[in-house]
Length: 447
Image (cartoon, rainbow, N blue to C red; front, side):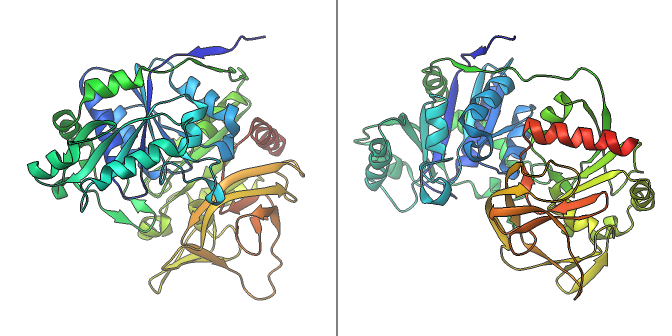
């Protein structure tokens, strides 16, 4: 029996008063500044987001992990933190929304919740534009709202003149770790799902010099050292390779949890990555198409070199999974701005992009159909999409998931499946049971 793993890596939470205050910029800049000092930095993101971690990954040159009690449970948050922090000198954790904003308007799965789980000090990011002394009222209110959350200080963003800075620094009751002026030249663009990915715009990495010049980095490091060790259970591993899974990974399919990759590998899966837009289909026992932006790459996807081989694999009974963007890719066509483009055509139904969110939030459900996951098992994840799926009248759709929370494809149903192909809007967070059953199902399909 393996003993627990102790982790005493210094850690700091970069939280915000709300969305849009600049916490992603501050976190990425801090990561870059720390790396420039020669430190090994492990970055984390509270919540189910994929986009902000892409910027932290580029800054840290390490895999970035999500910390989400809704999907992982409290023990899962600790386990992921400890495993990912191995070999790191310091951990930087970016929060989600405002510090105390959790699921359903409560505390659960909030940044504050994660900070308590990890006994991590918090630095609050406050947008100072249009305020002076009111900044102190805001910081003091956040600091006293939950005494179990250690708000050690704050950083101001969108700062103005030198006089503006003096007005705010005067009378501060918490440590002001930084004053960051407006830098419109380094602002990263947004689109329908949030910021653009770091691979498309790397300007956020340049904030490392801004953070070094405008913040007390030594003070932030000292703050991060004020922690107690946390302890995790080691991940059990299967040393034998049982199956090979081809995983689509490129600009169109880029939303994955690295934890899912870890748990698939620990269950006996070898992962082979490829780009459907440019590569032939790799030899594998099953294929997994994650979320992303297929709607932005329709010309490449409609002519994807792997489509014919993928159809032959399905004819041979190989399992194919499509998650959100992957579901769109497996459908008959994608329509955006009045233009309809045929895609893989492995699932009946067509996807159409809307101008506003169709599904957004956490998902909870039960496996009630299909052959990939055990019936009766719980699924957890989140949905985050602007598209909807439409079916021809009279089509008898079969679904693998019945949701108690979330919208899914339609009417609380998700996991559309036809034979060995299944697509779903839910971004699943895999448990050991689900991962092991998927590997077993792929093994069975090989026979």
